[in-house]
Image 1 (tube, one colour):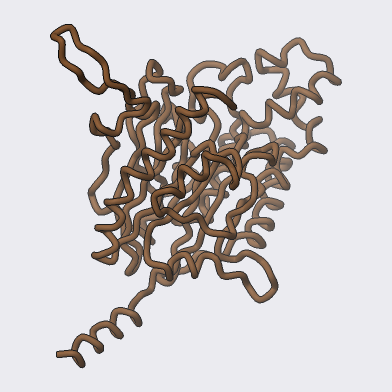
Image 2: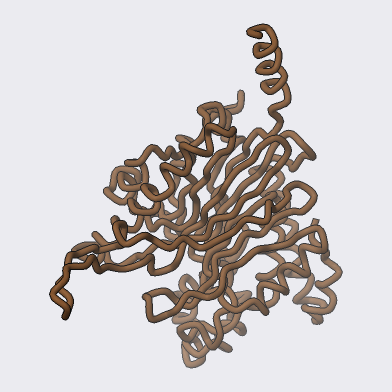
Length: 377
């Protein structure tokens, strides 16, 4: 549960604070409805969320800084899960404000910022986790490709008359760590893969990045399964749609995406950028893909964080804030109504979180295998 005493200090004006509390109450009610309650030892709630330019220095393409209220909304959403892969965290000052709201039971692991000369935006890949539920297994690293797997690989002539492979690493280096929750041991890799363009060579570079990370991790996943470990690959893949070649590249090496995660994940509701993919024992996916008796998806979903936050009807609440941003300073009220649709994505995000619930109590299966082993001997 987030520490909401911070509200008094970060939003000092009483009427403004009352407005934010009203939105938080609506959000809490929605989360109670859409996300299963956290439990102590039977399930793991895993999520992925791209937070647009979170903590990015400056005025973020002219849309200005996040208002303090957005930190409380983000913290409330994060608190409903046990482990969240967060993309587009830039400098950590703003992230630490969210962590303070979450409280001392929470921790995070982050990469260094990517070099913008590689084509990224100077961001970090981050895992945020509830220490009461998970423990970090002290293994983490960024993936560096061998020469034979470089993106856009080509054979080139050197000045010495030799032929060498040349190509690119990932624009934003994938980040893999090891965790355990209950009986469930797993390696998890988060990505924010190259977007490029909607067609042509830059789209093909995106397809190559998706296929390469899946291929790179596939053999590792096969080894891990022999030791009852799972491998989870998640984040912002910039997948266009389930039928598109971007998705085919993800699935080509044996990774599977839960069937129940079939909804668009971007703010506009027309792209499937974010994914959670598994290469693990069939029972893990079977559990996620179960549908409750009432037809609801209670083990996975794409969370519509815009249902109660920054809605179309709320735009007048933010006129003063929008005018404080460089892009909104000289706009008329009618122009601000149109501007609001873009501005709000820099307050919350242009992505929706997606999540799965994984069973972590395998004690019955373990005892069964022990009994079968004893009988065989």
